[in-house]
Length: 225
Image 1 (cartoon, rainbow, N blue to C red):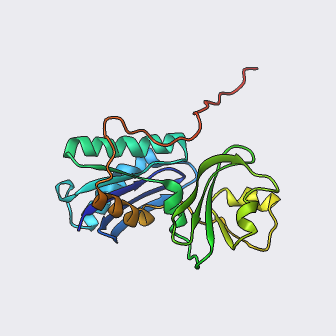
Image 2: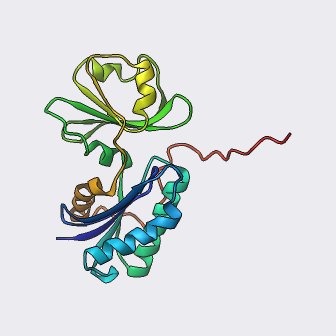
């Protein structure tokens, strides 16, 4: 088995887990609207290791949610993961944020899962997965309108989940849609994806790895009077 420290900071949920193979050993997380990642992340890592009765030297890899998501949140998580990998000489595993969200859905054969993260205005980050959480449409930043996801809605039941589902409700009305706005990215669902990548040796280059922002960061400043 492989003991992996999983870090999820792509959204408001600051989440840390330790997994052994596919199994979650412990979880520490807090979904706060004020993005407290910089204060909480390293505290959660310390608490998770203590609960699991492990030290950093017992870990086999570090996994981090790679995005898309909050620019600041992703930077905090990836910086922490890379620092640990450098100092401990451990491999780095990246987990697609939207795929780990999809894994929270209890989908039946033939269903589609579309995780959507809120972006600006009527825009979301989205990807499409089948009921086994295999990606069938790549991650995109897209503006939601009445025709969004129509090719999937006409063919099967669609689970539209995540923070972006709320704005989707405003314009999408189809009998095949099931909305769930409560799902947030969590380190709990990273375990199976991270372990599979560990077994395959699918590691990132620690020196050059960057989060998957999908869109350029825009710094918003207040207008001067």
